[in-house]
Length: 111
Image 1 (spheres, helix red, strand yellow):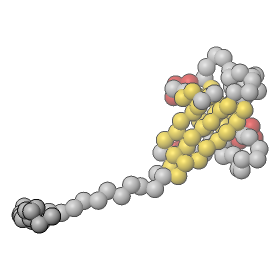
Image 2 (cartoon, rainbow, N blue to C red):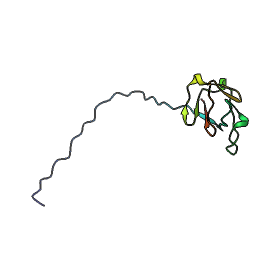
Image 3 (cartoon, rainbow, N blue to C red):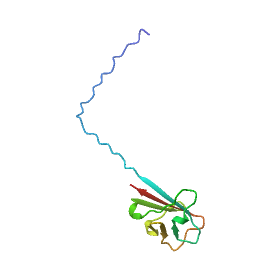
Image 4 (cartoon, rainbow, N blue to C red):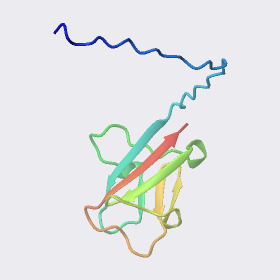
C-alpha cells in the first residue's frame, strides 16, 4: 500500500453569483366539496334530497359561490353544455337520462 500515490484533493472554485431575489409561490388553499347521487333511470333532475345517505350532508352549492365545477356520470366527465347547476339542483339538458344505478358526482372547487 505504500506504493500507491496519494492524489491531491480537488480544488473547487465556486462561481461568484450575484445576490438575486428568490420568489416562492405558495399555492392557494382550495376546498373541494362533492355531491354524490345514484340515478333512478327516470329523472334528469338531481336535488340535495337525492344525495347518497351516509356520506354526510350532500350539498349542491350556488354556482356563483364556486370557482369551478365538474360533473361525472358513471365516471365520465360531462361537457358543460349537458347540464345546468342551480343552488340545490342539477338539471341534465340531454334527451336521455342516466341508466338506473349510474353514479352522479358533482365536484365543486372553492378558492
